[in-house]
Every structure is written in structure tokens, then in C-alpha cells.
Image 1 (cartoon, rainbow over the protein chains, first blue to last red):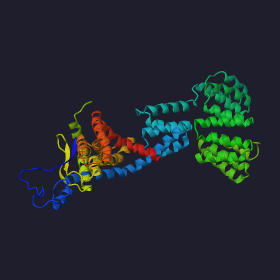
Image 2 (image 1 turned 120 degrees about the vertical axis):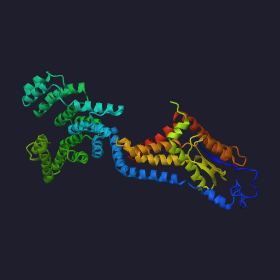
Image 3 (image 1 turned 90 degrees about the vertical axis):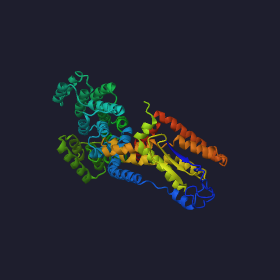
Image 4 (image 1 turned 180 degrees about the horizontal axis):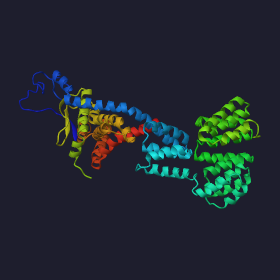
Length: 347
Length: 176
């Protein structure tokens, strides 16, 4: 308990009441609660702060300055982390991942940043970033139940893309170009990831009716299964059911408002029905979010191609090929080449 | 858990020093003579400032609630310089020291019942104070007593922690 007490003076019998109560030498200044002379009043107003208190304050200020210098980088990291948290709340997972990359540059082992990175990269289907974040915090413990439950949900989301029956997966791969074999395998598995793989190969063989039938069964099990929804959108596009195709893209965007694939797919759908202006908007959005994403570059290349910008579309194709040289997957460049060189009539 | 206030005051003595210093600085600001200052001692009250009654009501109020302003401000500034390090699990000994200082200072932000009593006697009980002054000061005194009561439930320490650790996080949230 501390106090501030205004005093009523210090009555003592020897005091001359007409003199200053403090020094008893000078006449006091009238008009104040306590009778002090001018000199005493001035000196008591400036009652000295002891030297040790001044040193104490200087010590605190010195430590604070050092800490504030260090705090600068923490502030920027905290702001990026805050932005990432907000972006995740709004399902803007690309933005979240970009913000988290900035945090992890400074604090690679931070639990919260890695946890959020697992969430963002899972919904972006960025397996590499997800794995890297996971490996950094796999052995760490946290009491943040909310973060843990969100990480678990994101992990389940990304995990569903991996087939569990690897033997069956190999059999499906082996039957990739054989429609009869693929159809025979369809009922041999209940795993939706494998069924979607079969549907994917049938899509390549342009058997859209059967793809739709399989995917409907998959969506009956999990209406938000990413690979199935995106495949269904492609089927609807190729069967000229453009509004349905766009609706499936919107379903993907409800899971991840910055799904670059879904935006690129929307651009391709709009191009197919010759809504080139809308297509250009979606392609630009996709490119803005992720300029190095092959789906985004493909959408941009197609917009350029149908706008008669041959040089630009070829440059985009070359960019995709350069990316594919690293990944080894040339699916996008192959289908885009056919459209750009006129071998395939897209619309 | 009940811990006698004197032990908490000893453990958080930097806050007591700043509290008394705040009273003294507000006295100096309003040109009120100060006769004696005890920045810290191991008995009740753990610190005090003896000064001439301030001539104006608002000065009396500010001298009494000065620690609330100064301690809170210092608690926030010192806490801010260390709190984010805790957020990123990279606090070092310096940060722990600063956080201890910040919470100690914040914990002594509430004016004491002695301050409330001074305010009550100088304003509410005074025949020269206006009704408006009394109407303004009465809830302040009530607030101070409520704070003193809350200290039984560690409200003072919770307040220090909230200002030192919670407020910086809130500000970052607003900056985003």
C-alpha cells in the first residue's frame, strides 16, 4: 500500500506562526494551505529525486532501448503473422502462405507460424511447404487447442489426396490407357482417392459420362473432395455445361477463396464459351495471386492466344515448360501446345 | 492463493518506487510543495509522499491518480519492448527482466486506499468544493476502492500482465 498525503503542517509549540513553518527564518507567503516562505516553497516544489532513483531510471531506459531495437524485427514478424491469421480466417490461403513465409524467414522454428503454414499450405495443396512446416514442429508441444484442431483438420484435408491402398493404386496406374481395365477396377475399391484416379484416367480418354458417374459416387461420400470437384468442373466444361462447371469452381473457392487452380479453371471455362473479358479477369486474378503457378500461366496463355497475342502466349508456354523441366510433369504444356498450335479446336 | 500484500509489494518493489515518483512528479507539475517522500520501505504503507494540499480540485485528482497514468504508461512501454519476444518464444534474460519490471510497475498503477482517502477528504468532504467536483470525484474514489478490493483476487497483477503482455498483442492486431 502506498500513499500520498497532503499535510496540514507540522504543529510544534515553539513555532513562530508568523514565520515560514519550514525554516522559521522568513515571513511566509500568504494564500497557501501551508505557511511557507518563497524560498522554501520553491525548494520544496522541486523536492529532489534521489540519485539512486535516477540511476534506476537510466538503467531501465538502457535495457528498454536495447530491447526496442530488437523489437523492430519482432513487430514486423508479428504483423505478418497477424495478417496470415486474418487471411486464414477469410480462407485466403495463398496470401496467408506468403505472409507466413516472411515470418518463417525470421523465425523458422516458431510453433504458431509453422502451424498456420501447415494449414495454409494444406488448403493450397502445397505438399512441399506442408511437409517442411510439419517437420519443423513435429516434436514440439503446444497448449493452443484451437490451432491444433485447425492443423488436424487441414492435415485430414491434405491427407485425403494420398491413396492408402498402394497396391490398388499401382494397378490403376498400370491400366491408365485401358478403358475396360479401368472400368473393371472401379468397383474394386471404396477409396474415393483411388476412384478419382480412375475417373481422371477416363477423363483423359474423354469418357465424360463414366467420369461423371464415378465422381458423383465420390461426391456422395465427400462433397468437398478437391480432386473430384475439380475433375467434375473440367467434365462440365468439356460437355458445354458452363454454369455447372463454374458452380464446381465456386465450390472449390468456398474451400479456398484464393484457389489459383479454380480461378484458372474459371478463365478456361469463360474462354470456352467465348466470354473472353471475364476470362481475362479470372486469369489476371490467378496470376496476381501466384505468378509462377502453371495453371495461372496456362490461363493467361490461353487468354493471350484467343486475343491474338501469339508472341505473348508462346512466351507463357515457354515459362510453363521451364517449370515443368524441374517438376517432370508436362501435362499442362502438352495440352496447351495443342491449343496454341491449332491441333486442338478448343472452342 | 492468499499472499499478504506486503510480500507482493516487496516482490514488485519497482512498481512502488514508480508509484511514489508519479505522485511526486504530479506535485512538481502543479507546483505543490513536497515535504517528504518514502519510495519504498518494508512496512505498511510501503511508500508515501507528504505534500501540501493542492489548491485546485483537478490538481488533487491528478496527484492522486498520477500513478495510474504514469505506471500504466511505463508498464505498456516497457512491456511492449519485451512482449513480442515472448510471442515468438525467443525471450532472453533481458526480456524476462523487462517483463518483470513492466508487470511490477503495472501492478502498482491503481491508486491506494490512502490516495482515495486523501481525495475523499480533500474534495468530497470539503465544504469549499463544488457539487460538480464531488460528483466527478466520488466515482473515482469508488473505483479506487474497487481496485483495492480486487487486489485480493490478484487484480493488480492481472492488470499489469494485461497491459504489459496483452495490450501489445491487441495493438498489433489493430495494425494488421
